[in-house]
Figure 1 (cartoon, rainbow, N blue to C red):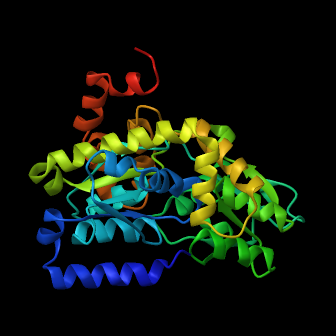
Figure 2 (cartoon, rainbow, N blue to C red):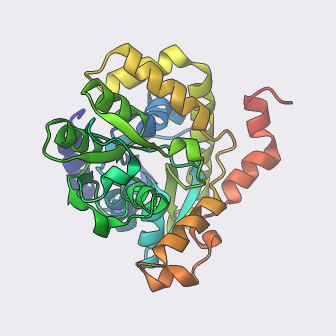
Figure 3 (cartoon, rainbow, N blue to C red):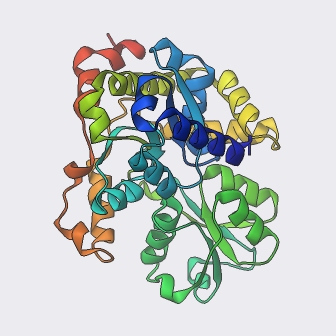
Length: 331
């Protein structure tokens, strides 16, 4: 979508000729968003298209990198200044040696649905069936594992097939190739229009989970804290803009996601609006929950603490300065 692959390639080539991360920090910054779903990516689109990034002195280009794991890898490699991500990928990246930290958050719960063919009548019917999955370490991968755990199953009880991003997963199930998948509100709505049915509504469970957040390297935080500070402020203002400008936000969604009608985007907007975090604080409880699951897969996770994966100084500054209260007219 939106010329994603070619644009990423152009950006990486530019960085190679320009001298890599050092030159990048001196001039334009690149921010990776890791999902083309409007439910996940629209706050970054809003920050760009509503002029909020420029307002905060950020000369930034957005690029799409498919999947949180790949986004974090690009961040660690120095190809981008910031990346959106999910807690699972941040945890995996840091445990693998990446010097990274979550600097602010957009969503602190797991707004996912398990949906599939109409003949799947109950969660228990998922056993033995085939699932369209995202790559390991993504929120979608974790969501499916958690959903299965909640009904007493595991990946061993299904036939998991790695398909990739949400559009491909939904298409694989709608075409009959696979039986079910997991996705956010937007993917669920797409699936329903194609005849698929919701099996598990994880959003109703309100499980603390570090979903979409903004991530930086600790080197960037040390060497260019002002750039990080401005990015955190810009994303907080983007959340406020999102919550108070429905028509404009829906139009931005339509610009980046060609195809579905306006009603689709309005439904996605309404759902995401309620979940966006006003103060943009990451959820330590959600990271702790993820670490407990990750500990069954990686012994390093058992020794880690949620605080190891965040740098809260910038969101603390927002709170102490009254920036958030001023945005929402609370002072």
